[in-house]
Image (cartoon, rainbow, N blue to C red):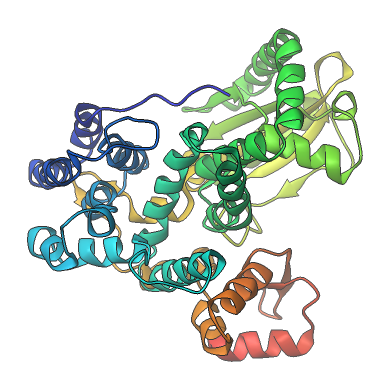
Length: 426
């Protein structure tokens, strides 16, 4: 797994200067100076200056093109917990929204609980409840967790495994439910690295040994797809190969009880176009060129996933008779596929486009539904977190209403559950 580039404060400045106006760039730079001053005497477990961590978190958020307040909160997410600064100080210097996000992300480290398990559950409950009011809380927390996972090697083995397990159990599913796949995939791969290093290493080694062979096949497939869609005269297309993620291969090996050599759909091509009609035109051209594999076509454009993901998926018998997976989507769909709900908070063309999350497409925000109800029914924080894991992160089913709407419910839900779901939404 390639090491992520360590960003500097100047790198973050350059990232935000590409999409923020001068006033907002100054606000983010001010947050860096604020955090630098407060953290300047502190070190991380690795011995590095602590300020490196807030810089990386802010950088991850800047790479997602998040709005100014979210990037500011990335710089400040630890100041209330770990320094002399108070929430009132943060609100006075940076405004109410930043204070709300920082408060939501901050752990309850100054409150004593009967056990570390209880404290962990209480922290998660606070995080999820804060998220139900402002989704940016969890986006900052995911960026925080992502950098912590990138630097997990500095901790002792027992703590590595605990944090990796928590990441796989809580944070990767949250990233998935919010559609932020670029973070989900990295969290899963790194968690596997610490939870089952042998499996991680074996898959990585096997992929590397066959890397040149895969690259040659992918290059051939990309060339053939480009040639196949020439007659469509599309103005703006992009065709490229994409790597399969180690954890997804591991899950297939475990779930289907197969060896690496028996996993055939390691090759994947992505095609990006401007419009929805063009996605179906490209699909037709690909199916005319190669034989589709039965049962492997999925139309997530006509029926999007609950987190807003849209794309056409097909598998064909590609070059050399090998199975080849192809994903076809518009550029806008690709942005949602990579960044999920974060794309709705993104800062575009010099203005913050997020507005009020409650006015966003409810289908894309359904990860939040039920959190407050679960809180009301829970006996304690531990009970609440078990409910969250059971309700939000298990397999889901999708049911059509007579009007063609799609309702998402937990696996094994019945007609009465559907009736209550419809009623509460009304």
